Image (cartoon, rainbow, N blue to C red; front, side, top):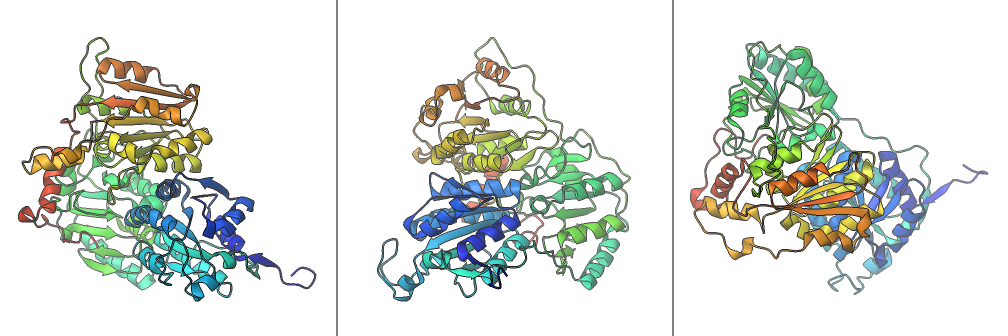
Length: 578
């Protein structure tokens, strides 16, 4: 109350305040006429910065990268074309468990009530087409009204945070500026729900499963990264001497410099030594692990009866489900009752092949076998590594990462073009850390526009682009089924070294191309330490050469894609772990 009068706030400002309470400091988007009222409110709001994107899809990728570093991200687009363009990125956030708030500036309530024929619509009077589409890639949705604004905003944001997935908020222009009572308390992040009796029952079942175990192992996925469980996992492994394997989407949770880290497990695609430890375990504790066709679902030799699975809101032992139980509570209880592993395992499981000196004098072409150790040697503790789907993703699996490195990748959704905008978003979220992006020429041609904002924000990223003249994943799949490469796997070859000059003065960046080991060695030796300018390194490789693990992946993926050869999973259920 001020002077006996109730304080009020505009609905758009109320939404921004709740987002700020949750941790949002930047909103990424593209302006539009239906969204002008809300966009103006963002520009005037103290504590949240508007960041314009080149297109809405890039805004979604950028918010995804930002959310993975800052904890939550947000986009602002307009009704129709804008919100539809961002849906692809929201689907990726849904699949990869990334909390992103999609805010859509919509037509006024009067326009919608009268079913008016207006632009950006199908002129059929139905203004909920796109909101219904958003239901498929978000966990909560609302179209705000002044009467229920606070209740609906808090409900949807609660779902975004507690489920760690995207949500959809439409804010009509007249509602954005409508006055409502100012809330008396800030928005508080919801606490995870745990049913104590279910937790006790889970603990009893887990204790029985662990009683005679001598070779247990931890397998970590991406969800514990979102939930900040890295320190708890490290404490668990340290006290009980358990080896830790990571799924590709779980990289960065556990320190890969730790002697207990054994490497990436992806079924048959994994290195033999990693498979021996994981598949030879008598108990596998899966922490937020997700199995799908591209990471071992059909080839993982894991007995479901030996799996203790910790999900975001439930846990299971040998397929028996207990919930609701938060992942943190289940892990804490396991920590209390776990046994110490007495049998050893090779501490050299994840030793990378190492970088023998690149040939600085000859004209040897660059192979993947030589490229990835060279890039690994460039990584520093605390870097943020962003990997594109395809060649770059498999190359990343060949590396052992330094302490404190965070990894951003989207292997489940596998939408090419993610890396550059996501890298920009990560750099906005944590500007003090160096961002290293690894992409391909295919991904580069989809979303290079966010280079402009990288320069606008003064980011000194290091970007490696592998030029293999097209889509290596398509070629690998064709080879796996015995077909010759088709023309659709080829793309025009841009002058990538000249691309950055479109976005900035040439003194603001370094762009170089390596076709031989000697050229690559020279380029790498000249990289600034610490980085002073954005550095772009194009690496030209033979289109038929692929990284380690990719041939195995292509055989597995082709079997899943072509029905005549469709396999049953080796041991896991068709749906993976539930």
